[in-house]
Length: 254
Image 1 (cartoon, helix red, strand yellow):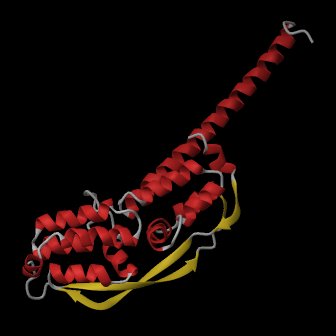
Image 2 (cartoon, one colour; image 1 turned 90 degrees about the horizontal axis):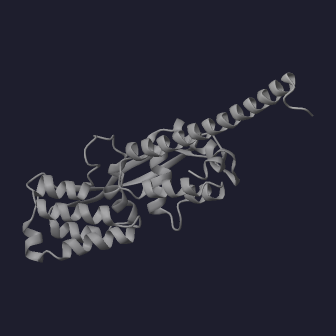
Image 3 (tube, helix red, strand yellow; image 1 turned 60 degrees about the vertical axis):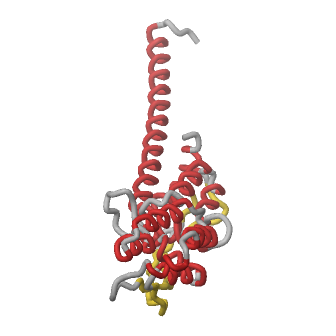
C-alpha cells in the first residue's frame, strides 16, 4: 500500500484513545407476536433498539458460517417459520446503508408489501413472542492514546471485541456524520487504512471477522515496510563495501 509509510509515521492533530465499553442490555417493555406487530414496532421503536436487533448480533462470537443472523429475520424464520419473509428482511438489513433511517425504511418496505391480513396470520406460537431490548453504553478509557495510525492499530490489537464494535459499528450507525476513527486515520496520513476500516465496518461481517481482516492487512503492511527498509540498508552496505574493496585494490582512485 502506498501509504504504509504514513501509517508508521503520520501524526494526527490530536491523540485517539480507544474506549473499552460495557453494554447494559435491558427490556424495552415491548414484544411482538406477529408480522403486523413487527411492522408497527419497526416503524416506532427508537434507533438504539432497532440497532440492537439488526447490528448487535455482529458482536456475537464468529461461528464461521455466512455471518451473523440479525434478531428480526432470525425470529421470523425460526419462530414464525416464514422463510421467504425472513430472507427478504435479512437482505434488507444487509443492503442498508449504515444509517438507522435507511434500515428502518427498508424493513418497513418489506413488511408493508405483505397484505395486512397475512401479516396478522403469520404469528408466533404460544410463548414465542419476540421481546425487544434496549441498551446503554458505559465507556472506560483504555489508557492507550495513539498519536499515529500505527500506534492506533497496535492499541486496537490489544483491545477486546467490544471496543472494535463500539468504534467501527456502533459509532458508524448511531453518530451523525463520518465515523470518528475513519476521520482520524485520514488526518493521520493513512487514507487507505481509513478506507479499509470504513469498508469493513459496512461489510456486515462479525466483529471477529472484520478485526481479523484489518489486523492482518496492517501487519502485512508493516512487514512489507520493514523488508523494504532492510533491502535499502543491505544495498547501502553492499555499495560501501564495494567502494572500500575497490579503493584497497587501487581500482577506485579518489
